[in-house]
Image (tube, rainbow, N blue to C red; front, side, top):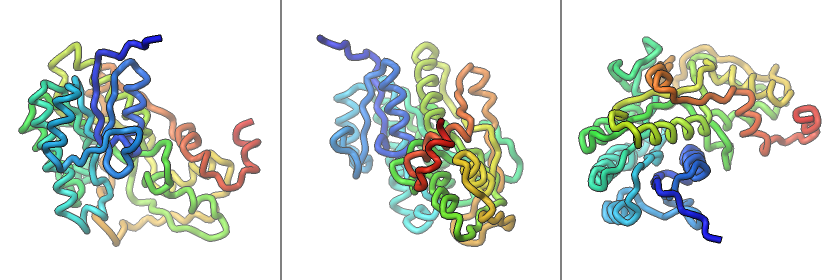
Length: 313
């Protein structure tokens, strides 16, 4: 029989990525008509759109007429941004500015996903009103993207979030899950950063925040500006690796904490903890405990299946 198409429409960019997939699923399962777009990994599930092609972007937005656009697409790897600054700036800044203009043209509410890396990490926790000072080019391009979307469309929400994890397609999709092999192969010792303070955040929780923000906005046009969301468990990569080992009942004695600040790659903020009280006061938020979330995310990548029984039964 006919199933009614939900009347609320949302367009998600970067829908093939770790965060975008979760955002698409969250809206799709909660009575929104969701359309996702991606680029290399788009077909057959999502629309294939090059966000640097302003005509293609104009066309899909005018055809679909979304009420909300969640802009997840970005170059998010700090070391790649440093090595390919022009391409990163095109995607993180120019494409975001254009998307904001097109959103304004159809009266859509834009949620621009940004990062804790807009802060230098010297005086946490950071409120939305604190002055950004990005240490690396990734943080700089995302901050420029924030300014560009707010200049081109005042009806925009900027949502800053920290390091993400979730149900990955490949372990390399997240800076958290990528550690799983080092954890599992306990026959050789592994050095793990124990300097940078992180707040690993589940993409399902960010997706719920995006939907709650969108739904609140449909009832209240004053919902706009900058917002922070983050998990609340503070951990270094070493501590995350130990928590992952613990979640799967694996040894962690081969993991070595390194307390010096990293020398290679882009500069990282020591502790860019985000203060989330603004969203919490609006009654918006969701937090999955790290051990539960990481177990769900990494389960398919567990090599030694003998642990199936002990972990789950």
